[in-house]
Image (cartoon, rainbow, N blue to C red; front, side, top):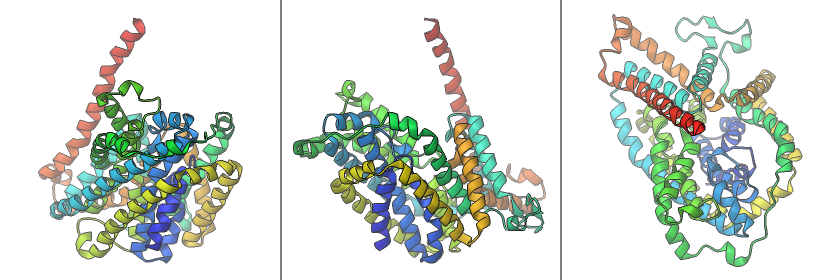
Length: 488
């Protein structure tokens, strides 16, 4: 319970700091999991991820800067409410919608994970390789605006996972003659470099631009800080629809909260009677995207627990924690480590309630404190903590150097619009995919034809092909319309 409470508070605070995402916070705290029991470690990081999604709405509403990409749609109506002196009302709407959406997703996780796991328990290596390949291609094609850049990001992560000893022949590969790389790259410096140090570099380059656009909070009246029962009733249909959209999108590997919030916002605006007022400061415009981006949290864990395939960056980090403690993730986890899984479910429900209380009563105060702390103090401190975290994992200065190298890599990836999230997920998935592929080829005498003999494998092979085809079709279909508009 102590770790759950700490995770809820820390997640809200971290999410509220512009530019510092929940993923970055989790990356810095992964080394802590070496020294605590598995359930406490997993509950701590899982709740940080949940609370961090809500925390991003605080800076979005108060400072017109989303703390996380998941809160990008919340700006559209959240900050106009702050400018009208209704910051408290906007933050309470966000906390209520986030908690209901998150609770919906968590219930779906609890109900669906075991059901899907009972089915996937019958799958063999060919089917698992098809699932891994499906995840690779979907993540690469969907997680980035460009299919090519998404695939490049995914291939980079898979290539980094190949460094180290071959799992069958024990021959070193891609080690460049360095003994430190014989056991492969550690997940911790990779996470810290790509998510934390690269973010510090980005904030350093953008600090002056942000300083010029800085928006201050407007003092709000007591009347404007309350959320009436009538207003809650008005928001509930949008919260329900947003939660449903987020829960469905959360099942898709790599799509994430950023997509869910804009889909829910667009759908809510289309159906709303006051749709023409959305974007000027209406509470429904906050309720819909906040419910959607938090509803992603639970369902994104279903592929991880049922298949061993992380559906999001945070799920990939949790997979790393499972591996640290020697817990095999997949359909058998409900039998071998069921107490940990069910404890994690309970931690998620309790964490939702706690961060709702923190958000309802403390969001404005957290925002004011963050507003008073200069970024010149925040980000150097984060950089120092990141280096300490990289060293703590294996007490290795080599890992600190790796984290700095990947910080530069992550910074250049961001400038070129490559996806660091796709790289990390692919890095985590690649060893399992390689093992499944080799086991599949050893099972049959016909080489790759073994996959053609497995109907379920063929279904999973066809899913990413269909997804990429739909995306390409929609893109080419929209091009003539853009040309005609320009001509007109």
